[in-house]
Length: 196
Image (tube, rainbow, N blue to C red; front, side):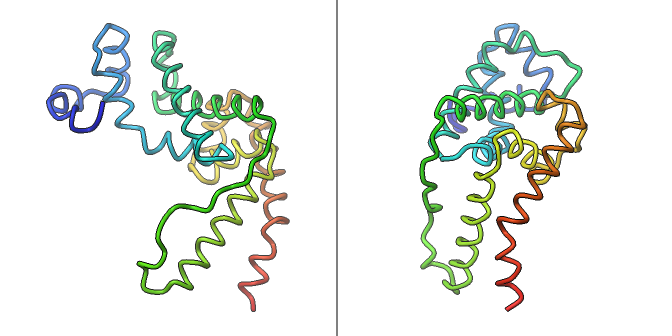
């Protein structure tokens, strides 16, 4: 259902909280889950994209995660935010897909036409840096990457990330520390280029 389809639903459903929307979905309201997904889609997509090796894997994992959330909504316990619950389902779907693939395809260049920008050299530098950072993230073990993405990129606290990822806080701290150390080594050349 596209955003245009939500226009008539907006007044009725958009004022509801995430928990209310999920409860309405479980009770049989066919539009409630669509409204909930629409509300959090950008965050969930970025989570899938940052956790996956490719855009295609991210899209597939996000679809699998949303189907899983749709089917298992009745099992949601209100001890966490709905957004955190969805985030955890997306991360787990991405990690499952990585485990299934067991291959490391090349990373495509980001889409976009840099010729439209006023200074192509600055844009190319930003694209190159973005690719290098993405490639370095892909060098991390999937569990380390998920922890680093949750804490350093998504801004979750260590305790929230631990709850989302389903591991103890010490494990999140350890995975983040090891991941950051590896990233620092992999991206050290960027600091050297910046000092030239």
